Figure: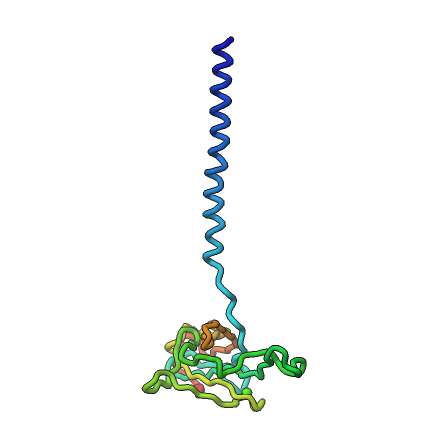
Length: 186
Ligand SMILES: [Ca+2]
């Protein structure tokens, strides 16, 4: 009888001690699972308006001419500062003076016009809205675009370190094996 009680007691201690250990093991794995998404989280880039081949649509690119230059503009927008009296009449957007043009890439390609101090800055009002836009030129062969691409994305950073990106549609002309070429984009 005593022996049976002792056995029960030992068993009870074993169960309790197991019960204490199990949650500890679970907690560790749960912590590991929670840590992963926290590391993966990154801020969403600021969205900017871009215009591939400004001035016309569709934005046709001859995919057989890998040396062609693709013009891409970041459209400047009037920026309404906090507390601006006319905030309802203007668009919240990016001020191109805040853009670090040396950080800009289009589908992995960088500006082709490079001077002594790196990529040249080219501001011009391409859409005639009286607000300067920032214009870039990229060689097709330097981009990740292929003959099936239907959109191109430009990425970069503001001087304050904020990442931004913008996407516009493209229409690739010419099948991959067509050697006749055709119209070459400026
Ligand atoms: Ca403009």
